[in-house]
Structure formats: C-alpha cells, structure tokens
Image (cartoon, rainbow over all chains, first blue to last red):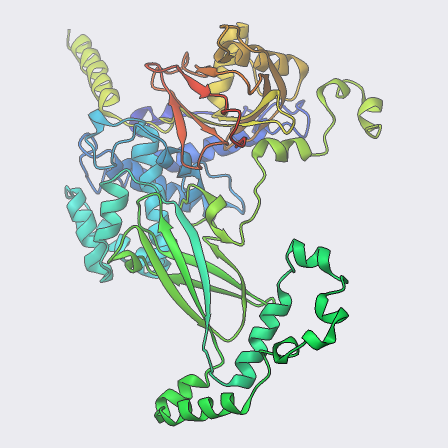
Length: 393
Length: 176
C-alpha cells in the first residue's frame, strides 16, 4: 500500500539492500518476486501520479474521491502498460470490474465519498475502467487523449467539479457523452448484452425455377419423422392394386408448370426498373436482436464469421440504444452466409455474462475445471520428484 | 516550548493529512465461483483474493509470517483457514469438510481452488467470512454457477451467512 503525502517515503514493498526483489532461495516457479517488483513499481506510479491529480488539478477528494483516485488509477494503468509488455495491472481492464459491477450493494461513482460502499472498486477501479473504455472503445485514443489533456490544461491550479470534467471532455472532443456519464458515473447498472435472436431473410425471386428448387431442397433436407422411417420399404395399397393410382400419386409439386411461368411473367410486368433490380438482389438479410440485460448501454463490438471463414469486425455505436434501451434489432445485409456472431470478442465492455454473447452459443469451462485440467501433479505427489514424474495410472 | 509546539503541530498536521488522504490499497473484496462437480457430491470453488490480505490472515492464524509459496505448510494453513471461514452447512448444522486442491499466486490476484463435501439433496447455507478478520469492510462476492450470470451473493460483516443451495423438486430437471 501507499500514500501520496509526505509519508510517500514509507511506501512498500521494498527490494533488499542488495537490490534483489525477493529471497533468491525461493523456487523459480514461486512468483513472490513478481509481487515485490510490481507492487513497488505500481505504488510509486500511483502515488507520484497524485502530484498532478489532485495536487495540481485540485478536485475535492472528500466530495468526489474518484476525481483524483479514479483518474490517477486510470493513468497508473496507462503508465504500467507502457512500462513493459504484459505488465500485470490490477485495475484498468474492463473484465476486472465485472464482479463488482454485477454485484449488489453498490452506489454510483458520484456518491459522496463518506457514503461510498467498497471505496476501492467505486472510486478507483470503476472510474479507471470507465475511462479506459471511453478511450479504447468509444472515443478512440487520439480524440480521448486530446480531450483529457485539454481538461488537465484548463483546470490545472483550479478546482474542477465533475461537471467540469464531463463538459470539458465533450467540449474538447465534440462527442456527446451524456449516456456514458449517466450510465457509468450516476448509475449502478452493469453491462450484459445478450444475442437473443438471429433470423435470415432471403428475397423471394418469384421465379418458379429458383423458388421451387429451393423449396425442394428444404424439403429434402428435413429428417423424415419416425413413422416415415419405420414405414420405409413397406408395400402400400397402391403398389398392390395399381388401378388405385391417380394423377396425384406421380405428381411432383416442385415441378415448374406453364402456369407457374405465366404467373411469373405477370408479376414481372408489374415491377418498375428499381424494383426489378431489388428483385434480382442475391443477398442475405440477417436480423440480429440484442438484449440489454444489465441496463448499462454500450457500443456493440461484433465479430462476424462467414461460411468462407472470413472474419469481419464491426462496432455499432451506443446510439443504437437511443430509442429502446432494452432491446434492439439490427439488420445486416451480406453477400455471404454468416456462420457466427460474437459480441465483445476482446472483452472490452465489462460484459458480465459472456455465455450469452455468441451465436452459436460457445460452451464455457469454469475456472475450477480449467485448474483441474492443468497437467500438474496432485498434492500427494509433490513431495517426491520420482512420484510426480510418473505418468498418472 | 517552541520545539514542543512545532512537534505537536507536525503530528497534528500528519494526522489531519492521514485522515483526509487516500491510499493505494483500498480494495477489500473477494470473488468466488461455486459449482457442482460432474457427479455431484461436491461443491467446487474457485476463490480469488488479494494475496497480501491472505498472507496477513494466514500469518495471524499461524502466529508466524506466511508467504504464499507452493509448500505443504502453506497449503495446510490455507486449508485450515478456509475450513474456519468458508463454512457450508446443511440443515443438520454440520460444517462440511473443505479439501484444498491448490492455489495460483500472482501479483494481480491469488486463486484458491477447493472442494466442499455436500449433497445436492439437502438445503445448504454458506457462512463466508474470508478476510473479514482483516478488514471490517471486506466484501465477499460469490457467484453460483447454476444461477444466471449476473446473480451474485455478497457476504459482509453484517450478512456473513446466506442460503447457498435449495434442492430442486423431484419432477423438474436439475439445473446443476
């Protein structure tokens, strides 16, 4: 732990006098050195960061703890990620906030700090995560960085309030973010978007050669029911007594007749040029329904997989929820067949339930199952090298 | 006298600053996932804690400094601690035994993996006081994997015990 005032000199953990991070006699796979190293680097980054927030951009940390701790934790995360590859930041990435945001007994970030529950998550982690999402997924790094710098520049040696921060970010970027501040800072909802329905629509060409062939294909693809399966090969009455056969015994309902051609020509004659072009469109129309189960609106980053294994990534802005914050249906027009759609493939929205993010549904293993599947010897075998090197019988 | 006043002023200022200040480790929460084993008969738990908090609790329990390394004494200490603080009880009031499978300790977090002997035919309650002895504001969030994803139980000093599992009716399919 640490503190930003003069007692910063007492922050810990500390390396040894010989500059090693931990006792060298520890086994290599005991990562205690990791905690000593990263613990100290992180706390120094954080406490030194306070020189700016709130020492220079002097927000009221008793009223709104998040305005210094949250912003500082966010900048701490950026600094840690700039330190080395795979720096194990404890806060900042969206998935680390999921359990807190999906839990009960929360209060909004905007709550006065004397009344906050779970101060660490509320004032440090959640604001940092929100700003990270704003930077990576909503505004983009360039726009966010410009707006954030502008806030720091305008309010250095001054006393900003939350409204000043919100207004400056919008003013400098030109992006309307009222939905974002409301959801993340004034509410306690979480992100949980589910893909609940996917429907495919194709143009009915009305061409009998095309449509009847398609219907025949659909019928042939259907599994016969049990009765049909068990009656296969059975001799019917019309087989024993051919005189009972009539027109409909040999009739092929999917054969194209002159009447069908005539109806088609009649239909084509009613179309104008524009309608003819649409009629001949050979495209797939997918409607995908997203349900907002968590309450917090979010952009929809999607990964779409096609039948030819091509992958497309598209992000639908949060404004899609503007008219209905509970459920939206989006139309996708494609040349290719879609074989899979996944919401938030890079875990960038703090979605609380990833089990409903994909179509088709992806099975998920629990953490316990993943731990059991690791190839490590059980407790009883670890005392003896010979024992743990033996294959499991 | 001036020196004394200066000392008192410094102490007072330091106290004032400390009272109004912030700190880099204000997180006191844990997260657990609980599910039934494939064959039933056991609850499988994955519990995430802040490693420094767990070390402090184990050190207090053992009356000696405990560092999270993969050694039998540490494993035993963790199992003992969990038996005392993660208590699953049936209707008979008997606390079910805990068996530690292992743990993973890293800078970001420490995960403890353990099982609890229990039967899905009985109503079970959970008394979850892990790390509550370290900080009264500790909040232990617990996700039951047989419930919807966002359904999370929260255990605090005010509410250390809650119903964990109620048996399913005979004629409905199990949702384990």
